[in-house]
Amino acid sequence: MSTNIFAFVVVLGILIFFHELGHFLVARLLGVGVEKFSLGFGPRLFGKKIGLTDYRISAIPLGGFVKMVGEDPTAEMDPEDIPISFTHKHVFKRILIVAAGPVFNLLLAVMIFYVIFQVSGTYILMPSIGGVQENSPAASAGLQTGDRITAIDGTPISSWEEMAVAITASAGRPIALTIQRPEWDIFTVSITPQAAMSKNLFGEDIERHLIGISSAGEVVNQRLNPIEALSESFRQTYNITKLTIVSIIKLIQGTVSTKTLGGPIMIAELAGQQAREGALNLVFFIALLSINLAIINFLPIPVLDGGHILFFLIEAIIRRPVNTRMREIAQQAGIFILIMLMIFVFYNDLSRIFSS
Image (cartoon, rainbow, N blue to C red; front, side, top):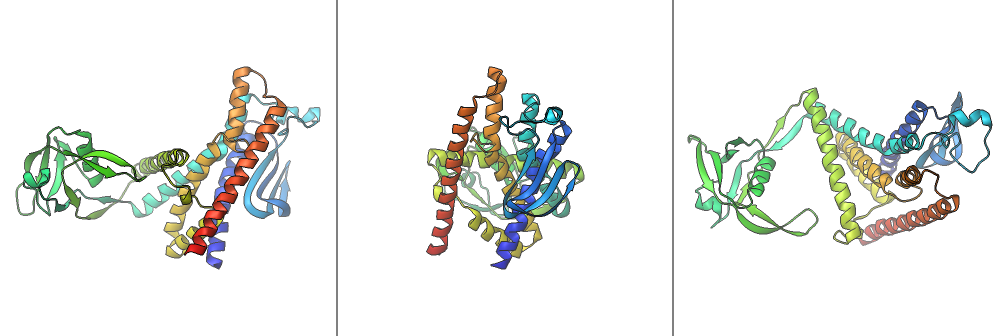
């Protein structure tokens, strides 16, 4: 239990720090004064004021905030503060400041993946055949357990993923597979993939073209140079971001069960589990959560960064700020949505605990 709590605080602290650091750095870069940089909400525990900014640790470690000069457009302001006021900056500068928080969460994920790929490289599932289905195109072509596919239509294949993508992309047309068989010369066979129904990651039925083979499970470690590691880091971040967005869409559509949603209790349990399994697992988990936090904050819900960006985009289009009353109503609706969501994920967390 203590491991869970400690890991939860560490994970949340890192995510919040980078998120608020993004707002802070871009605000200062664009000439906006920052009054408070806080990790946590509620009463100030300790901190230090440097220049205009009070850097503080607050009592409730479930978030954080950056309070900028002139952040509230309805508040009275000293004329001397107008040059460093957030509200008085051009609307696109305000968009950049607000967007910087979630963008920094994405950059944190890239940084973590980069370190992981530099330290441990990447692991590749080789295109080696572990089994051949009876009466399948592969069986008809004479493929055997132990064969390795080295090319498809003359294009070199270095992983099972590349092979699967190429076979699916054939759309049922004949393809030429170059095969390396133990103690045999390399040879080529022609195979016509067959359409078959299968399940995707979300449990949906999809049609794919297959040849009827299974993996031998042969995995090799590939070391990466700094450029390759950076490229792979961006690719990994992009793939997880895309999967997260699709998952949210599937949740809204009802394809994915809302029971999969988790709150602070679930995060604490997972963080503790990853911490016990090793530092590498924990930092990978932080990267995943950082991407999720970025995507959630980009949602166009008032009180979230995405909601603020939406208002600023509307302001840029109509060339005047959104009506104050409309903003207040939207903020209240956003708070209501977040409270309902928090209650729901807490309910899910407690249901998992009592049902286990």
